[in-house]
Length: 203
Length: 236
Image (cartoon, rainbow over all chains, first blue to last red; front, top):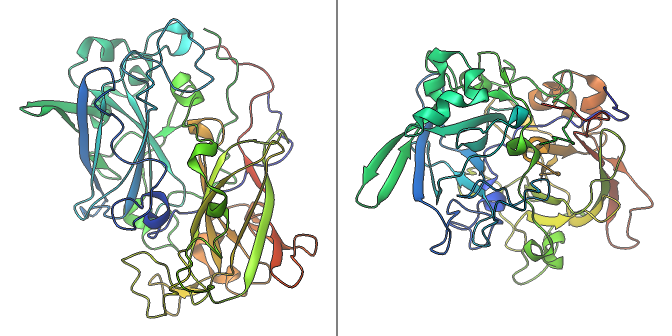
């Protein structure tokens, strides 16, 4: 049922100049609310890096974009009052939100932990995933997607959201695991357009 | 599990499209395939929570938070408004981040190459929380218009960028506040990209005598509406 009394405000582009407000730590001598390191040494779970490039339809990098991530902790609990599952532990060393401004190559990087599984529709477990929002100059509305993990084949097969995506496009949102001496690194490039266009959700 | 509180969808009659040819850089940066519908699970119904430990009082005063050896140049303004949802309910304790150009139309951002002066006493970014009634207030300097490369003689209308979270990841909103009577608004493709003219005009703040601070700052009112809860709980 539609209960709308007042219409929602329209969005507008984040523009090219957000960094000194939203991601100021590196270059502006101020502290933002969040950066691209979500996990501290005290954070429970498998510590991972998630990285990739944002690529425009003409092959140019989105070198001035903001990538935001939101995820559950390693046990599969969100640090938010709407996740009321007391039997799944919160991690005081993890809040689950991160921000990264892309670099000249369009690259984003997050140091985090691999999220646990959380329930989805009909109480079916979802595969581990990270929710992402992408914004940049040239984007009038933000784009929503998810990052899944290549080493979760069985969980991915059971995931109702992945199942709702046509099979040929599923790889656009599954990050490829690479085991390095420093730990697991997951790679996923995000293509705004073209044959490899990433699946974006109407979230 | 009962997903007792889902949110009304993004209204694509109000939200600007990804592709809007008048705004040249949307052409290669816009998703082209249809968006895939996403059910609202815990991943969508939760989101980052920031409280009083994330903000200091001075963060809401852009006339002071960048001061080095004096006051910033330009017309002082006070902006106040309310954040509500589509059901008319206030959105309390939500973080708002704002950023803008200085009075000369120059951003502090390192890649802003516009040949207008920086103001050593103006940084141009702030953050604050809404109160229990959804209200917010901050002080700043009226931002200047500035040229951009989109088309010949293109200048952006004066604007302040707003970033809000609301109660969940799906209520995220980044928008811009404009000023009444700006002659650049009917020429601005970013403003014009909003398909609904009434929605567009709601991004124009109102001059307010009530919000004006005597002998100090001009007052403007600007209200923001985030996506609201559905009246009827949805079961998955």
